[in-house]
Image (tube, rainbow, N blue to C red; front, side):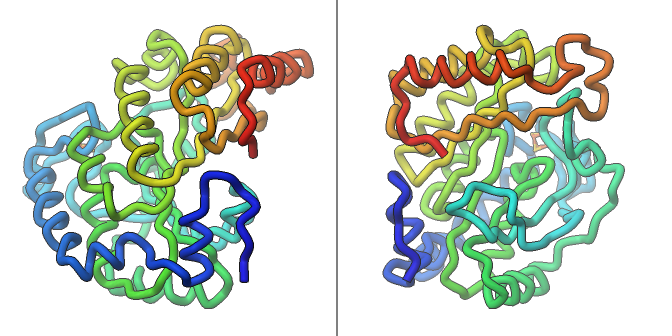
Length: 302
Ligand code: SF4
């Protein structure tokens, strides 16, 4: 039996121990998943899976900002040992495309669709998910890029799966309210980025508007609906404008959330065009980030 030593992930461990069912299985039994699939197909025809709300008909092969029509593709899938300790090995499926355009993106080739990927066949992915579970996977981890443009395909995959395993939504949390409705009662764990404490930084480096309002709204919804691991990637020279407001907001609103303060930033893609992002974190910055977290009183740290 896999024991839970992690606060805030009781249900996740209950599914791992086969004491409870994954949410998507319950949703299938109640015919809720099939209803959600119909709703997702409707969203696809006037796409507002994310808050860019492009309004394109992806079923008619139109593409919006993310560049993806109705056909989803994934770049790779494997047992990932680099995620949070409670998740590994995690069966990670990397979908191509993203709703962000991060100038320092580590997965820029996938996110920008320089990798064509393998088109999703739900039955085939369901077989692969079962095989990875047999190989030891503790969960299925939908990521990219970002999984948001692929929500419809992910639901079709779930509809053909039958194994009891937690479903993890690994996202930038820039999805729409309608997408949050669809994810509700289906996703067991949100593995969720909270990157910017300042809308100007979000627009400058990821080309997104209203980042704070949208992300905090979605974090509150996720926290009320499921279990959440919050990831904050500390960016060099962004301790006071980004790390500090995020930590303070978390301490005030959701202080018991599982919080992963990440120090692994290194410059990728176009980061060398920004002097302030063209380095790893300094020792002083790491110490300052830890001080911010300690002063705020966050305790459930990865
Ligand atoms: S997922 Fe977002 S970026 Fe992509 S088409 Fe839909 S609304 Fe636009």
